[in-house]
Image 1: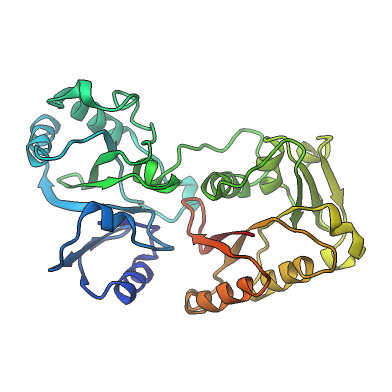
Image 2: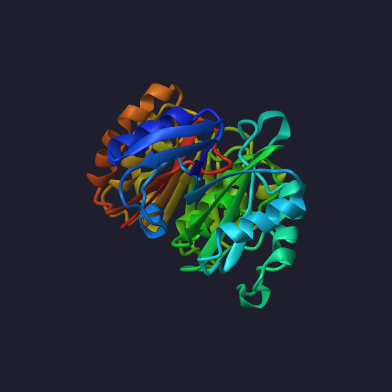
Amino acid sequence: MMTCQCGTERFLKLEILERYHDLRAAFSRPGFITFKTSSDWDAKRVSKIHSIFARYKGLSLGRLPREDINSACKSIWNMVMDLRIDRIHVFSRDLAVPGTNDFEPHIDSECIEIHHQLYRDCPYRKRLAAGADYYALYPAERKEIVLDVVPISPSEWYIGYHIAEDWRSCQPGGIVNLRRPFDSVSRAYLKFEEGLRWSGFPIQVGSRWLDIGAAPGGASQALLARGAEVTGVDPAEISPVLTNNPNFHHLRSRHNQLKRNYFRKIRWVITDMNVAPNYTLDVLEDIVLQKDTNIHGLLFTLKLVKWDLIADIPVYIQRIKSWGYTQIALAQMQFNRQEIMVAVRK
């Protein structure tokens, strides 16, 4: 079973069915998809599934009609008697596209209530991992076996489990516990705060970053909070929240108007331009292929201005590889909308 952003279900199905021919689509709802197979799949194999659009991946144990929370939670522990569960994650499917009417993916109060009841009913509470008690938002540790409970509707839950293998699979339902700060200047803060955590980029105090198309400054804000030195390139206005920060420098121009030697000291680049993917790649290519530049990594969004552009993703990857970068990861973040995040490193 998998979760994804509302509206990307058919792309997730195509992505999985093209790669894994022994799977076939089964029950689904907006933001939630299951697959059936006659092959021998276990949780470890499920954890290795590669997907851009799947936020969470787990091995389904089936659905459970919810009569009341108490009886349902007791039934769940009976379903997993043969598993040594280390942690409990309860999360719901998305009910809307992120950013629509202030909706953002999150662990809601119902999920927290179910988590608490599952913990109280656990037959071996003392064996659960540290932090697995009443803190429903606590991420798993690598290699832990996680019980997954997904309320699909008021009367039905899906039950499963997964092995936490990477950063995303450690988060409950693949959802990072992140709220937009009161002083954030744009929603790009959420996208890049999540993207920086997902990418694992080594952001050191004083590291030099370039933000192309920075206005109003949300992406740069996430870097400044970590002590990075950021240059924002944009002819538009940048919020005073950033320009008043001594570690931020605003260049009111376009990237192609900068002197070529300017990029010599830059090591990392981010961008969140609202343009077609090939234009974003043109801009980045113009920087990384310049003589005497040494860009260690790139973190950027590709706007899928038409969903049909998903078919061109392999072409985008090959183009990035031609720049000399070997580590390329793509995923749709929980705070992305019709776009994907790309992390690139040498």
